[in-house]
Length: 149
Image 1 (tube, rainbow, N blue to C red):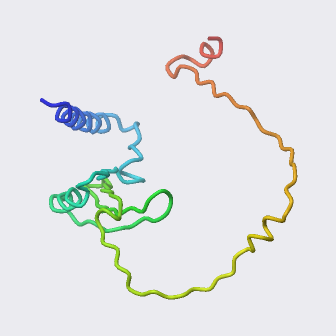
Image 2 (cartoon, rainbow, N blue to C red):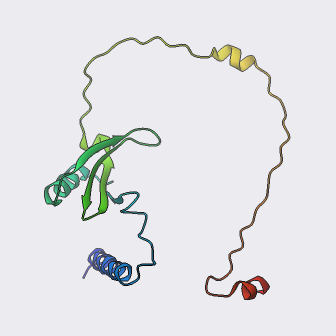
Image 3 (tube, rainbow, N blue to C red):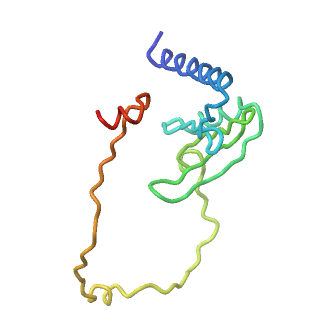
């Protein structure tokens, strides 16, 4: 069994064990991933288009196409639900989509004058900054004992 196959097998077993744990202990909250935000499946590889297409073919339900722009990169997402678990497959948009220029037009906009901004002097400001340390006691120790250790 290759490392990749072993890791996949262990991950799937872990998901089943987590499902059993959640089913047996109603006081444990559901994970955020899958409920509030989708569980992410990332196709950040050279064959992203093929991987996303395969995901779309085998997914048992409808998928919504969504794009996300900004930050470091632009993304293409396929978002769906498996029995109440939100799932999202993601790839870099330029690996799965084709950029098509539909029109070219001139746009005029007001921007700050860079020469005037360069001439604006800087000022020195003093501010209060907290240096913080987080101390986390052992979760299973009573608070009184944890405070003394």
